[in-house]
Image (tube, rainbow, N blue to C red; front, side, top):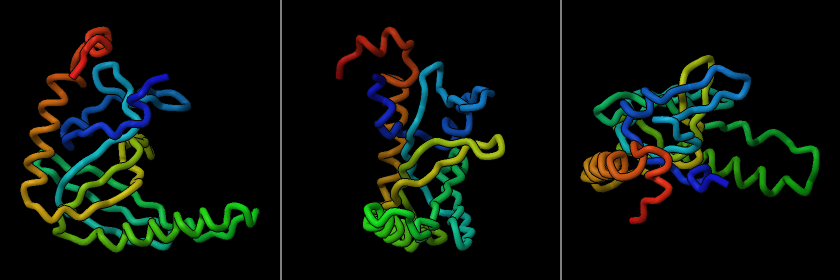
Length: 163
């Protein structure tokens, strides 16, 4: 099993927007042949479009803008009462995260990398407002280091690499 399937890969927007997408029924998103499932970004919210079922927003980190989608339609009644409490928690968390997304706010966004109408986007899992303005610079430095030491290595070399 690929351990990176459950890890959030720290990326810059420019790296995210240059990911390769295979053209198949279930597209695979990859960077230098390495599949990317989840990602993390830090940047400023520069666009916000709130609709009844979702919140679309753009996060700009200085290298580009990452389109993000936060689904809010967890409020739909479930067919089984066994899942009702889980749906209530998901709906509450989605509303809390949506309340943090305002124009001009520095945020850390984590979620699944998905494709919608041929365009890459992040399906948001969580949003954290960063209070420290240096968080964006630190994220940039971590992205550069991880790219050099891990993400851009050939797959065989990466398997042998130990921190």
